[in-house]
Length: 267
Image (tube, rainbow, N blue to C red):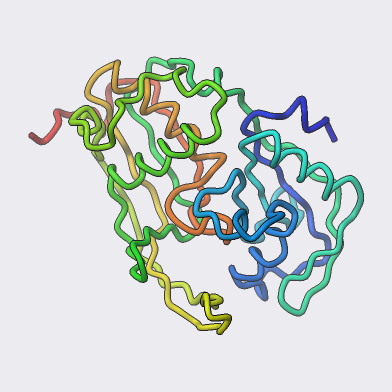
């Protein structure tokens, strides 16, 4: 595996878990199995924003495993330490050894920031994606909530946040120049067992969605920050509870400015 120092850039890995039955794995099992690789203190464990994201078990090239997105050198180093040799993980009543991780994709922050000439992108939400406010969970994504989360990740983990022209305030009208021109979403409900601050455990229902959202930027200046933020979603995910397997995303960039999404802003 390449050294963590060489990979102190956003990267996404597939960690094979031979003989795992993914149908028996709940989302809370994922967090329990992998958070210990990265969280070394109570503050890190309870942090809302983490430099890593974990997918539920999936299949890649015929193998079952999880995908893990990494955002900074600390997360890379801890991932490298945990995967130097096969590591036993417990996913519910299944105890399995991990196999050698495979690099799925990576990009430096400068590569993410590089203009592509596109003003339109489709974000594919591959796992249930939820947006939380207090005890509420909502399946309804909005440009504001998606951008705010990705903007926060960029500012927290990028070594040179000024690489893209981010408006300084999330309430800046400039953020309205990125809008949703198409979507195909399905509402989901996921049962999740959580631990309350009191120590008790409770099963809650998390409202979420899967599917696709197509964004369009009104001008090149908007595209200069919107494109990099949306590309970052492939590494950090979207929405809340990304360390538990929610919000795994892929991005499709549309190079042409013509097509079904290329129509005037509705207002």
